[in-house]
Length: 391
Image 1 (cartoon, helix red, strand yellow):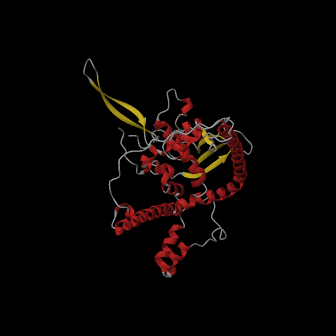
Image 2 (image 1 turned 45 degrees about the vertical axis):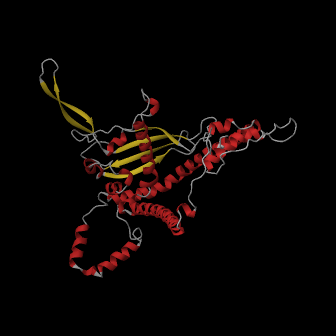
Image 3 (image 1 turned 120 degrees about the vertical axis):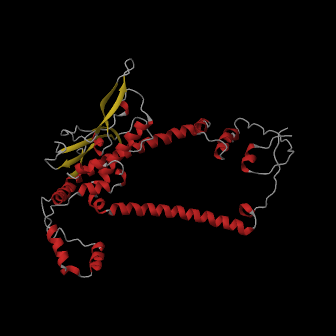
């Protein structure tokens, strides 16, 4: 009795209990010009899913194919070099446009802080929300109570709690902003991103958090955090995926006495081993706070010991948060203040959920078809198939 071929077993094909032996194929003669099919037999098996080992797959390639593979990899590296040049030009373009954006951000800051009142032309903006509010009000513009509310609103300066409200609406910041952070963030007047000038290497960007002065918490008018980025790929690095953050520098916050929310004092009881006397000691430990953001984790390269998975996760989260400030929060602050940006993100998630529901419905339809046929597995008749046995 001979063993049933492994390929037939995996593909679920039937086989007879007794299989006639077949002669081995003759080796190709030298100089026949025909490819040696034996060289590709291992590759064919892997392509059929019988083995999943990319390294073994490459090792099994015939020398002429390996030679062509080298040419393809060299082309890939040339693509990587062009990609790096592309990202450099994108950065330079962003840096040139930064001055144009700055004028808009200056105006936004003046309105938020109350340094300037918007003109009638500034307020020439109509939205669907306003139409709904006017319809709901039902022409109550002459209501004395409403007019009284408008009179009291005239005493409000700027946009109170603008940045605190915007940041609390950012899903990525949920859990980072603590209750004791909120009074401090109420004094936040602006957030800016500064890019390194065009053509300067290495490229970098800095986040600047401006606070009202004086404030009762710290003396710094601005808290900064700088991110240095690597743009060019290493030699022969064909796995390049674009610029990456390689290091960052925070800043020292000059807290006023008793106002440091990044630390807390705990009391701990200790017992002397020999005398048995108990004593209570006080110790300062790190406290959860948004302002820990300005004390970044130590880079992996500067660690005395190998980086843990938790540290790598902290670094990755820190870099992603900085990128989100740069790309989303700063340019779209008013949309986070009103919640429009949050609603847009929720709609995108709902669309993804709908796609998943459609797939589930398709599966349900398949099951219904199977049930209607009166036979399981798509109407295929059930029965025992002959087993392949080794003897």
